[in-house]
Image 1 (cartoon, rainbow, N blue to C red):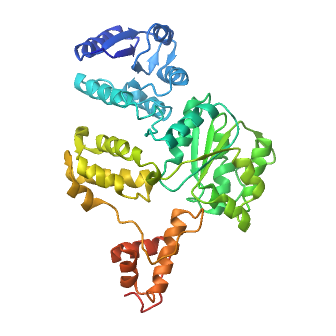
Image 2: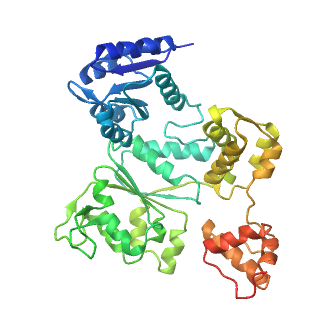
Image 3: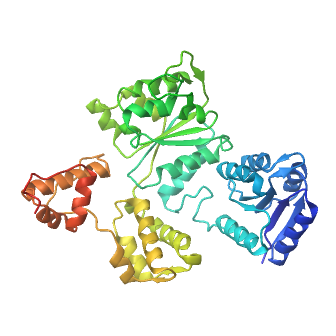
Length: 443
């Protein structure tokens, strides 16, 4: 079996030799360097599968090295070694892409465990792309090819797809595949922030701009300068804010609230939505010019039920990730049942399903009974009309609930039977969408 190359960067020769010795005994091929310059020269001679670096180095620090490594080798796991007094720098390194950090002094068993975990992420099967996108279906293969082609473009990208399909994962992959990968990736969910606060979050504000603005604050556009800003659920953006976003896309200039000068930025915009923006444009709820500005490069992620060949790969991946020590096997009968499930919540729903079983069951075999007992119940009924084209999953679910309540005379128990879900689940979903039956009609 080929030995895995590991590079240790530490100017303390004794400590470096101890780490090299322990890793050699573990079966790794360890090499050392005392400076950033030596480390980079070593990387040219042989590319390691893992780098372990001290924070404090004679010609810089471990974070400088980390940024250089990830710029040229995205996905390379880097472990940072830190003394107690420099933990703040280690946390900063994690934010910049380090896999993990070790605090001096550490035991060889601790080192061995972290190295093994880091390399498990590196030794992914061929069906898992280095950006974390899992699948071999034609749709996923096409998306991966698109990511490579557009990674270095500055044009806006619009990612569409149902909730839970992995739109943010694709956005992160686009960022990681291009020349901006060493720069910030900043994400904001436009639906999760009240409309009156979203503008301040995006553009920032100057001290005194409004009551409570006690100091200057940078907005997400500025924080993502030279990098990527991911605008999730763009379809929910308030119409009053849309022209301001359009102006940024047209001019590349951002003006903080309460400020008199605009700032030039070089931020790539990737937007995502589970709504039909064309329909929103036709209804006057979304600006047509902004729509065309955003969808210069469109990417659609099909729902999981339309690429069932990816389900076994995803299920096994989640089982390995969540089961204790990764020791959970999915039986053939269980896998067949999992593949036949519609997964209206897509990858996120499948992930939560496997995670729930792993937490309760632990390691062992995921049986057919385990699958049947834990499969989520989809909101499907013969008596309800088909969804309009382009309707989001949330809108469709809300519409189906309203229809069932109307047909049942606003009786919850009857509506639940019509939807083929337990009464308590219907009540939860009604609360989620702010639906209340008339007084005295709870059933």
